[in-house]
Length: 281
Image (cartoon, rainbow, N blue to C red):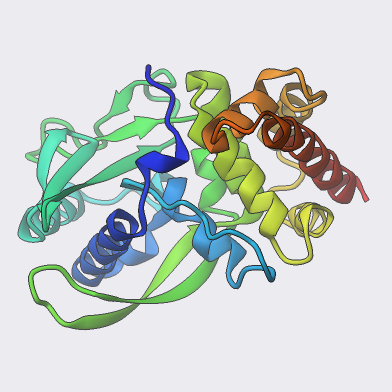
């Protein structure tokens, strides 16, 4: 897998993703309460207004939505409606969990995630297979936490296809469920962008990483077994500057300045250490 770099991202693509999100959520009716934003578009909402002098988040090339399967056993018709609305918004299925469309020359991808014991982690789950709905979701560890630890954000964006400006409410992963998803993702696929998203969000949240830790400690899922496993993993992967977590974070931002790369290694270690201290406090 090629390692992503900050230069692979730009504000224009991210804005297209935000517009796709606004269009989708504006079209899916009650499903707006049952899908939750995670992934690379989430940090801008989790962090909110940036500390003075902070670099904006690099953005994303896709929109990751967790489907809240635990919120009731929806009818096959509900899944068909969601699928039809995706098609109505101009998306076509690359795979059952992955939908794409081109927006002004830029490909925007929407991926559905879930957590279920019906299939192994890393496999695709089709909630209503055989009922006429081809919609699927990628089964990832920690996704169910988002349905219990989320925040509601109002976003305003131009809908696709000249649909006009729209204001929508989106449910975004809370700071703790986001950290859990990101460290599990880093463990599973070892992508530099996951380490960056993680450290960036903790660094710029509220008054800093310790504040992020205190907020995480107040989460309704703070005592969940998955959370404890994830935070143990987080501490292990970012414990010292020579480990892969800090290296992935620095590698994503590396512009060829050796001193800056060394500083980024240390920054990643300190951010995670302060976050975990805040959580334990």
